[in-house]
Image 1: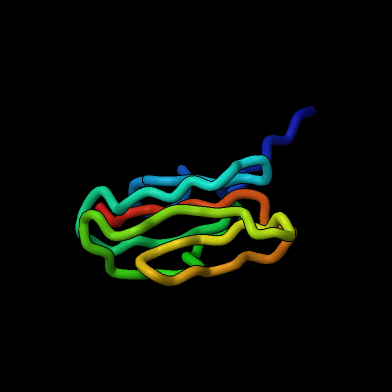
Image 2 (image 1 turned 90 degrees about the vertical axis):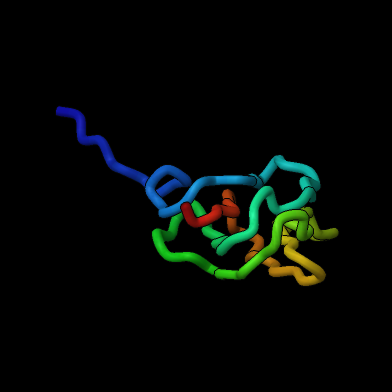
Length: 94
C-alpha cells in the first residue's frame, strides 16, 4: 500500500510566488513587480521567515554567498539562510 506525503512548498503557502531559489540556482536579483507586502518562505515551513513592505521597482531576489548559502536580497538589505536550506520563495500577498 502506498502512502503519499504532502510536503510544504510554494503552492501551500499564501500569496503569489514571484521568485524562487534552490541549491543549484545562481544569482537572481531583479525588482518587485508590484507595491505590496512580500513574504519570504522556505519550502519546509508554512510560516514566513520574513515579511517586508516593498514598492514596485525595489530590489528583490536571491544570491549565493561564497560558502554556497542562499541569501535573500530586498531593498538594500539581505537575509542569509542556513547552509542546509534547499528551497526558498519570495511571495507577494494577493
